[in-house]
Structures are given as structure tokens and as C-alpha cells.
Image: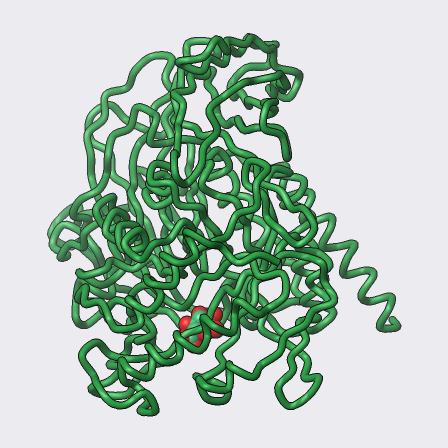
Length: 598
Ligand code: GCB
């Protein structure tokens, strides 16, 4: 086949895969708003570097039947790991472990009539195989998105056990693939629970203002478990909104009506108590209403230009280390962002846990949420695309009712290459179908040189995006901090640009002059020059420098300086604010009063 034909076939295949996936979502929305039984706590764990568990059938959780029986594993006698939690930071011997590990836990359950039960995982990194009472429930791939299995028929009255194999083995065809600048934390890293719902229930819904509108609501409710038309009601407390709609043959009810609401803003993040009813089921959610759209090269929030005073962050527990797993971790991280003067956070480089996005709703922080299409992945592999599509779909499904989320990011720092551009364009197309109310972005890092101090942002992927993210490391990976003063940037795109990353490593308390690498002074000096430069970048609407807190990375080995941490945090992993923190804080104070105009 000629190159053109191959490309066309690839795009066709990608489209087919993309469409097929976007129709198969069946996650339960708003799990925190449901009747749940937590399965968090200690789980027995067997480390299985040679993948013996499958052939030895660990999932049966057996005990010897008599004294001559050979069962060559024993969950009961195996030490426990805490769930939710990564395994790497719970046992020293597992810090660098990449491979399969088996979890087991028992629980009691009493069956209830007319009740459906789902086993829900907030996330597990990276591939999961789940079993209930010795029977396989299914598999899931992707380390940062939720998944569930219906267990209504598999549950027994009384004692039950779940066995879960989680493997964080890296693979070239996975998303992300072989290289990341963050720790490959393995395990059941988010909450695990049983979710109980009536036979007919509200499985999912999209309740937001119509795209770009400030006074019309539009959306849909998806009912599960009924083949008849079902009456669905939608009520918003504190307003006179009380609507009735009926489901169609797919169980979906759509609505569109005028609504006069107090709009959600970062300064006044109003959330309404929304109740959705179908059959015997009522689910409640706290939802904010706001519009976000593009006008020329500006982002408008509720019709007015907004400047994004942001910061990038990883989902790492600020002081304990390891994956952030709970509401307290989320609170500490987002409090740091507020202290810095932010109205915007970039959740790098994968969907963070739901505590963060729900807290962002309450605290008035705008959110950029991203899937881990990071650096190089297998652009030509349809299975890799299907995987990225599934992660995108589930990120959107979980958070599409969060007012805070304004940007879906498709990728970070990907090479300019036709297969990559087709791949990400495919993701952008399905995002537009799944959620026409938000903006689409990607963090780009390839620019063209137009002169010694001139850079052009002209990545062809820009055509598929609403907002361009630009990661540039002037003063760190290229050139000196002072060179920022003479840099000139241009772009042929008439689209908003967010400077999604710049930064420098400095362990807290390490001092030198501003020319000394790895010192707080170098980092602070780089921020001074960068902040002056970014204001001169065309279509500049905000920034999210790298990064809020130092984080674990296997690529950062210098003893005494990095110790396997990326030290570009403005705050150390012990909570110390570095000098650059105050430089950015001062800038954000000024920007809050007088945002740059273009
Ligand atoms: C980047 C990446 C980010 C890295 C950062 C760094 O460009 O997007 O994931 O951690 O640079 O510190 O090198």
C-alpha cells in the first residue's frame, strides 16, 4: 500500500474503534452519591514476579482440603497492604517493583431483594483482573480511571471474597508506554467499594448548561435496567426547576430548557443540589453551572475573558509520599494552590482522583484534566488508540458534571508526526461528541526556529485543538534563564495559548547564586525571567508552571539533590515553600488585579 492509502486506512480503523468505544460506556456516575460499602482497608497480598498466580489459580483462594493436598499459596498467611494505596511506598522491597501482585479480601454481605450490586474500583494501576468467589468478573486496562463490574448474581449471603491481580508492568503498546517522568506506582490506588442500586436506576447523566450558553440547560439521563419508557424527573433545589422527561428505547432521556441560575465562578463557586429520579431510584449531586467558550484568542468564562493563574500538579500525597488517595491529600494540594493565588490547576498527566475534582468544584479552582498520552506511544497501533479512547471516555464520564473542569487535555509533549496527529485528532473528535461543552487542549513542546531568538508555535495538531498548551523550558533544558528576556514567540494560530509548563529543579534549602544550578536562587531567578517573557507570548491566556510539589521520579538519580525526586516543585515534599513559590505568588497577586490583555 502507498503511504497515503495506509494513512487513510489507519484513520478509518481509528474512527471505527473510536465510535465503537464511545458507545460502550456503562460506568455508574456519581458513586459518592450512592449507597456504598467500603472495601478499603488491609488486603492480603502476594507478590508474583513470575506470574505464577494464573496457573496456580490464586483466584480460588483455596486452602488444602486434607493433609496431603498441595496448595502452593496462602492468602491468609500473606502480609497485608493497605487499600487504597500504591504498593511501592508501603514496603521498602516494593519501591521499584514492576509486575503482577495479587490482592485478596473477604467480606460479609446480606442479599437484598430488587437490588443490583456493583464492585467499583476508583482506579488500579495498570492492568486489573478481578474475581469474586473464585469466578472471573473481568479485566480492565488503564491506571487512572474508574471501572466497575456487576456482581448481583455472584454475591452469596454471608461470606464472600474478592481476589484481584494488578500488574504495573510497562509495555510499549500501553498508555502511557515505557517512559514517564513519574513513579510507576502499582496497586489498588483508589477506593474500592460495593455500590447498591435499585433494579432500575439512573446510571449516568449529563447536567450542564448548553454549549456556550448562560441561560439554557441541556443534557441527558441514562437509565439502566428497564426496556420500557421510564419517567425521569430532574429537580434543582432553591429554584423552580422541576422537569419530567421520558426515556427512549436506549433508556436515554434528553432535555433542553431555559434556566436562570446563579453561575459558578472561581470567586463564588455556587453549587446546586440536583436530584434525579427514575423508578425507585433517586440520586443527588452538587452541580455548578457556568459556560466556557472561545472568542478569538480568548477564553470566556460566563461570557467574560478569564486569565488562568495556574499550577501543574501530580497526584502524589504531599507529605506522606506515594499516590494521593484521600480527601485530606486533595485538601492539602488544593490549599497549596490557593495559597499561591491560583484560580486554575492542571492535573498532570492523567485523571486524578475524584476527591480532587469535587474539591475543585467547591473551592472554585478551574481544572485541566488529561489522559496519559505522554511522550512516545504506539501511534500506529489500533489497540493503543482503543485504550486511549477508553481512558478518555471514562475520564469524561466521571467528571462531566464538574463545573470546575473546563479543559480536556488529549496529550502531553508528543512528537510531530502524521500518525501521532491522526491519533490525537481522533481523540479530539470523540471528545467533541461526548462533551460539546468544554474546551480541548494538548500540551505541545515542538516549535520551529525562525531566528536565533525566535520561536514559532506551529504544530499541526493545533488545528484539532481549541486551546494550545505550550511547555517550554528556556533556562533549564535549553539556554539560560536570562535568555528569556530576548525571546520572541509567534504562532499562526488565532487561538488561546496556555503556557502549560516551565520550571527548574531545586531541592528546598539548597542555596547558591542565581547562576548555580540546583539552587533555590536559580529556580527563583528562572521564574522571574520566565514570568516576564510569558506575558509577551501572543494569545497568552494563562499558565501552569511545573510543578506544585516535588514528586517521585525514577529518572532523577543525583544523590543528595534529587534522590529519585523531580525537584521542580515550588514546595518540597516536606511542605517547605521555596523562593520561587513567593515569586509566582507575587505575580499572581498582580495578575488578579490586572490580568494581561491582548
Ligand atoms: C516535561 C514533562 C513533565 C516533566 C518535566 C520535567 O516537559 O511534561 O512530565 O516532569 O518536563 O521536569 O522535565
